[in-house]
Image (cartoon, rainbow, N blue to C red; front, side):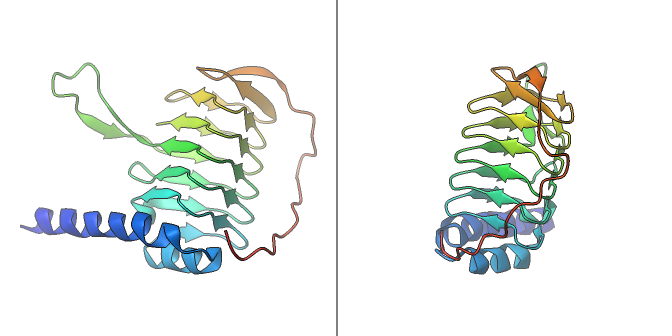
Length: 183
């Protein structure tokens, strides 16, 4: 009985997050409601409209981070996103998967960590167990495969994403604080 009640509450929270909160046009209100659902979101961070969120209480987002519209944040296996991270449109961070060796395709999760200063370009997919180190870039349409470690200050590209070169940029970016309240 307790298990069924938890499943019903989790399902209701999923609907609340993704069919109500995700459509509120003011990101400061969305941020407040996500926090009320257990998500930890730092100062000046924002999640844009129509982003799908699962298990928000297992998601931690640092300061000055932007998650753009139509993204997917999967908290089932824990998701940690650092400070000054930019995640572009339609990107997906997926912590859960199925064991292809199992006859029943058993489900399991692994945490994803995205360290400070990283940029995930449009339609990037990051799969279970991936670890993106400080200031790395994953180019548009790339897929970071399970348990991949993306090195610090490097650029990754492709399917599967592979290192293409070192990144030449400021070691510690200081982004401007965004003052737009709707989106």
